[in-house]
Length: 94
Length: 253
Length: 206
Image (cartoon, each protein chain N blue to C red):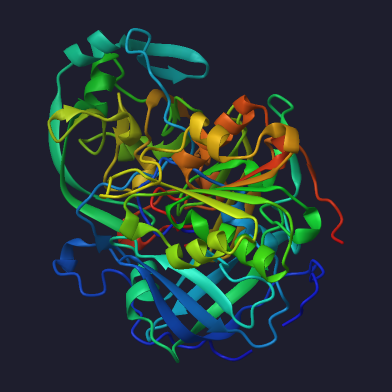
């Protein structure tokens, strides 16, 4: 996900990465509930702050800043690191 | 264009070619593009699309834009703010003409979504170009003649930067149950009757719905505004699960 | 699947940039200094800040802020290149060269050939020692004559400008010698293990 402006420590959120996650997971991921492995806080991916700008999406827990999900698109594929998430629960679509 | 709520599509999305029908100058920096998208599967208000441009040398660039059009509309509309030194937004907000084509993928998003079926009241808080997905909600509510009360608090830099100003005035004046409060952060024009400061707890209280009505709140705009407003809504007593947020970049997407 | 439609008049940014002989392939010149961070900007208390050299879980040397400032300083003016395609020419930095740090620590022969840089906020990046010595890198504390701003990595960041700028780790706190090269934060997410902009080593496999 690229932000068109280059200013930027201000994070976006999981909504900004929805298209990329949809490519990888083949379903809508902003409604996935992610539980932080650092502190147990959970919430929908769409509400989680995302850092990383044009380099990639680093989802960080609002409570403890643990990187709960990291994603980067490369020419060879999408790299995903879910180590920071204790669980990711994707509700069934209607 | 399906009039009923679309089923959430499973499976990956495909890129489709869309054609620009109209480019509407909303403000000096902002244009809405009305698009013909053949076989569009439908969308829900609040969702966005990815737009992909391909240059003659094959170079591609991709950005996300909220759909500003109601799900019931005949064509799609996105609203683009020109970001200085941006790569895609200057092209879309200045160069694009009717007949131009690019690729689009969507609809995307399931969290930041409102349908009339979800009920209201509808409490909308926007900063700058963050109004775009909320306008899809406003338009969806209007075209379905929903009776859910709606209040919009909309922050802009100056009066000239207010996007959809005329349409919002008409809707508010039409007794459709929509109330609009504008606030300006960088100017105070003569005769201005709106607010003139950043959105804060006092404004959310006076111009919004109280928590007792359990409104569905949607906040969209620059990260700073979104986080300040969301925090204030929690302090006022709104339930966390009724507050949905979407952060744009500092100057919007 | 048919070819994507050409968007009339769209071209990549920087397609008409001058001075392209100084630009690595795929880069374009910018006038501002974009900020990109993998996490929130850490708040750093200088009274508690220190920079350390470590190997095998043993501290080899450590400097408080005042001690660090008292070390011999180096000034450089360099071009920097971000993997996201922007480049900036003639950026002026002041700090302590890695050579100076090793000297001050009494390290003649580095105990291992690679380094992992550890930073406030948890960011890491790996760099071969050979790319840190011989004047190639420093721990920078001043940019354009002023203390390094927090969003740009202040109080101190690594500066290794011959590599893509993600290797110039912000909020650097520790240089750990490691026996084998290992991927840091971005390298473990698909970015190139080394990152030479002149060979366009942006991603793993490039």
